[in-house]
Image (cartoon, rainbow, N blue to C red; front, side):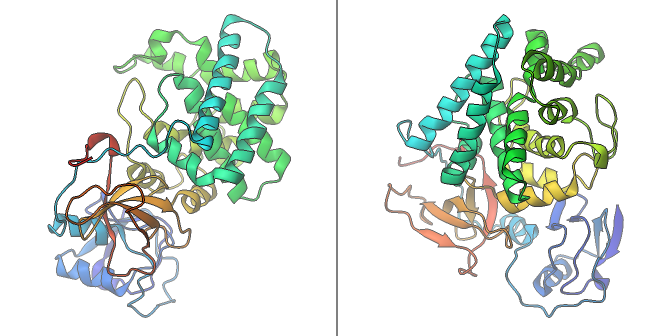
Length: 400
C-alpha cells in the first residue's frame, strides 16, 4: 500500500486504484475525483494519511471543490459511525411475487437447466439445442427485464437447484457485462452459454466435497480445483460445443496475475469470455448463500471486487461491471441519513453512490404499504445519502 499524506490531496485528484482510510474503509473508488468536502472531513476527523495500491493519475488537473455528484464511501459510513442514523428497523422484503411474469420465467430457466444437469449426471445424452435455447431466452429477458433479474440474484428467493441457480445467475451477470462491453450478439450468446456450463464439472466431483460445510483438506481442495477440466471435457466431448464455449469452462478460474488454475495463464492470454465469467462467478459466489458460508450484501461484494487491484480480475471487466451494478446493486436494501430504508431501483453509472431508490420504511420506522412509498433520485436530493447497506435476510418488519 502507498501512503499519501492528506495535506497533499487536492479536490479533483483521481487515483488508479481505490483509496482507503485505516487500510479498510473506502474513501473513494478508482477514477472517482476527490471533493473538497472529502478532504475537509479527513482533516476534521484527524486523519493524516490515506492508503492506496495505485497512484494519483491527474496530479496536474485540480477541480474546484463543492461538486456533489459522487459521495465517497466514508461520507456514508462516517455518518453512521457518528450516530446520525435515527435507528435501525428490522425488515424482510420479498421483492417479487411468485406469479409475476419475470420471476416465473427466472425460475423456469433454473428448472430447465436443472433437468439438463440431471441428465448429464445420469449419463443421458444431452444435445446443444436445449442449452442454447436457455441462453437465447436469458438474453431476451435481460433486454426486457434487466433490473428484475439483478434483483432476483440479490433477493435469493429461489431455494434448491443450487448448481443450476448459481449457473443461471452467473450467466445473467455475464450477459450484462457482455452487453455493457458492446460485444457482438453471437459472441454474447457464446459467453452466456459458457457461463451456464462453467461449473458443470462439479457434477463429476464427490458430493461430500462440493457440499462440505467446513474447510477443505489439501487433497479435497485439489479435487475441487479440477472441476474446470471436468467442465471442459463435458462441454467439448459430451455436448460438442464450440472451442469458444469450451475455453470459458476451462479458463474461468485463471487469474489476471497468472496465479489461477488449472494452467496459470496470465490475464491478457485468457479468453475474454472466461475473464467476464470469472468476475460474474465471483460476485455470484459472494452474494448467494452456499453450503459452506453465508451470503454477503451486494455492497460488500462490490467493495471486494473494487479492491482486487488487478490480481484476480481483468480491470476493464470490473469497470464495466461497476457501471452495471453500481456500488449498491439494484435490489439492495439501504438506509439513508434521515433513517429511512429504501430499495435501490436504478443504478446511475456515472454516479455509482447516488442511485434511484424506492422508500420502504419512513423516518418514523413505519413499513410502507405497496403504493405508499415514493421513488427518489439521490442525484437531485443532495441532502440525502446512503449511510449503509442492509442484509434483508437479517431484518423483520415491526409493523408488517
